[in-house]
Length: 350
Image (cartoon, rainbow, N blue to C red):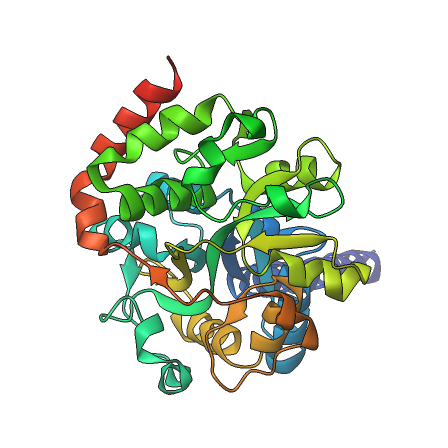
């Protein structure tokens, strides 16, 4: 009887020990899993960067391979939408890095106090005129010039526009795809471009071009998709867009119209989120984008890399850099943008 009781006591003790060990193992496993999750960088980027044909997945894969740091790449809309998303999440921060805030939105981004300055080593290889934020809170990773691209198989050579003013000609009625400046950095680029060229008379141009627009889309992806599907022969895009078709489709069908008055320069920045819990790894990602990833960005994002050491494909011969590049100081944009957008909305809704 005593032996039986002793056996039960020993068995109970052994079972308890095993359960405790199993519980400890599970807790340890859960903790390790949580640590892995906590060590994953979250990067917000604009939709086309993250898309099937964008550079996002390749950049992330190469970074993970080089560093062993996991990245959760999140498609977070266009520039204004990304800023709004980070602002809404400021009390429960998610992102560590935000990629794709352009120079046009620099004032809004800097005044938000959502981001932290980081002087990346690769800045020494970036030309001074491309470093639009002297605080190094927005580090430039690529750039281009806004342009109207056209389908050379659907638009006769004599009808290719040579200025913004040409686009108000009634012969272009229903032939132009525009983009909303309230929801898209590309659309905003055109609004600022017209301000740069026409000054206070910019709304006159919009009144003239309004009737020629087939539609005004919310973003670049939908606009350019309609263009390549043949719904209209002219679309707002970049001077670099034709290089994409040369590289991936082996065609020079799509061209960029170069205007005498110049083109609005856009520079895209990458930023460290101030509330990031993984700042050391976030800085490594920024360094990677400004250096190792530059060649891939040139090929798959079809924008000029900012790093002067990055090689360019031959297709960039079809991506002309305008002789005259225009820009508005971001402080002026901050001061006046709400008014410009409100006036634009009034004109385009009539």
